[in-house]
Picture 1 (cartoon, rainbow, N blue to C red):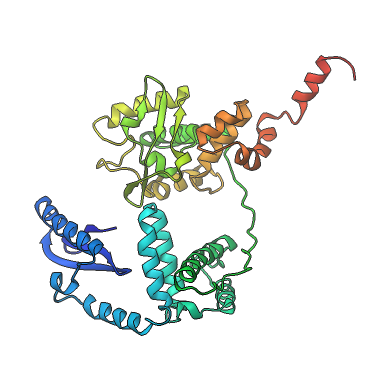
Picture 2 (picture 1 turned 45 degrees about the vertical axis):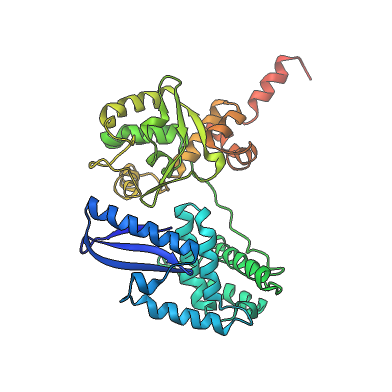
Length: 387
């Protein structure tokens, strides 16, 4: 992906694009004005077209760039491996550049972090065709010993994600350069089961009645629709149909950008309950002049800041156990199940392909919420006679 970005320190514009698997940032002396952005955008479109056609000359566009030396070194390394395989660093960057165009921005950032901060520092100088299974196993072992900022070791799930990226890179390299991938018979680490922590209806009522007035509508919609953070932050008024009483989930706001939803199945219609309908009607009077339903004071979509400034302080104030905002989604599912809604309808509201996840993840909370624990079945058979 190619972008025109702004350096906050100087308010100057710069190019940000990928070339030969390397992320390139080239500064300009132009200030951040609409006219300058349009001017640089035309230049960037031409650069992108030349790269696609194989006609791009970096030195012609940026004759004084420090990137020229780096690109030259890469060219030398590739020439050295002409009769063998490229280094892991070179191939990993090429692979990422080729496949990342189909990814959501958040996923692209996550995978790029793994490649640049973990895989390349460890495997970067090795010929990709010379990496052995023992190298992979040693790398994984070392990951288990890394301590993160909070003082904990990496989770099995986090380590498995690193290994998955490594497997994809090596599999593609093996296919292109005709060697056997060393990633064979390596089973993922067993993950610890994560329990969800939905809120009770009493806790939901307490939260909504206590939260700041300007966020009451926001949390009513979160708790009673099961929307993900990116979905509610990216919700536009064009996707709110008051006449049909439905919310269309079509886009997400992630990392400061609008993007496609998590999966194709996440594209769905959520039916408005009366509390949600009322909250959105109330919110419309506040932000109807904006494109987005929930915004900051300056009219931009809400982001992760609401978690730090509103959500966690509110839970501490109420004496409730700290939980991520994602638990509002789990809460919606458990409340729907407890109220007796059709599981297939609930799955559609959540954006699940079927009811499997619904019963696997949420159903154990239903007895605690309804306090039936099998009594409904006893009432049924007792009504039919003595057994």
